[in-house]
Amino acid sequence: PTATPTFDPDNVEGCPEEYDDGSEYEGGDRVSVTAAGEDYGKIYECKAWPEADHCGNEAYSPLNTEKLCNGLVCWPVAWTYIKGCTGTITPTATPTFDPANVEGCPDEYDDGGCTGSLTPTATPTFDPANVGGCPDEFEEGTDYEEGDKMSIVADGEDYGKIYKCKGWPVTGHCKSEAFSPLNTAKACS
Image (cartoon, rainbow, N blue to C red; front, side, top):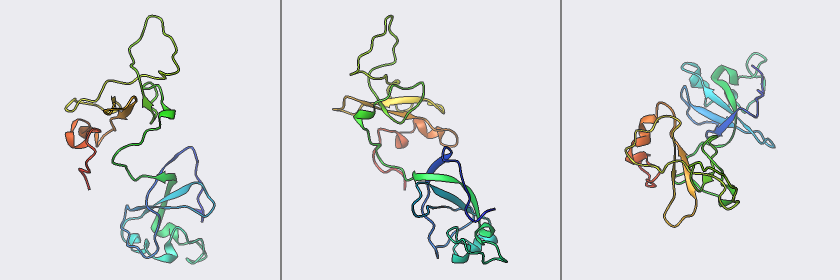
């Protein structure tokens, strides 16, 4: 291991909570560290016991690059570098939608919105006001599978929002009313 791991900026995900010196961490806990002036953070995972006992210790912090452990940095004793990250992994109750970013889905899923339909026509035409198509509307109770896409057009809106059923182990929730994209109540804590 190196004192400051590198990562591929094309292989990043949302950042978990920032590392906090003195906090209690258990094996498997993930934290992020973003150095001053950097656009990307780095994700670290606390190792299992007995090494996990060091995860909250400042000397073993992923932030600490001093060589305090027999001439080496200490963090690799307690932490495993996972990969780079950017942004957050904190979910929102209701996704936001930018009408200027309307995408034609579903061939390549893009977190954008949609308008129109996917129904093919004998002679396609291009209308800049109709920039894409929506997958079928979401129906509660439908047995959705991983990768299935559905759309929702909220009352009073001209554009739909596209949702995609996630993979295992959460696929079973895709048909549940409590986890429905229509449900904006905070059903989980």
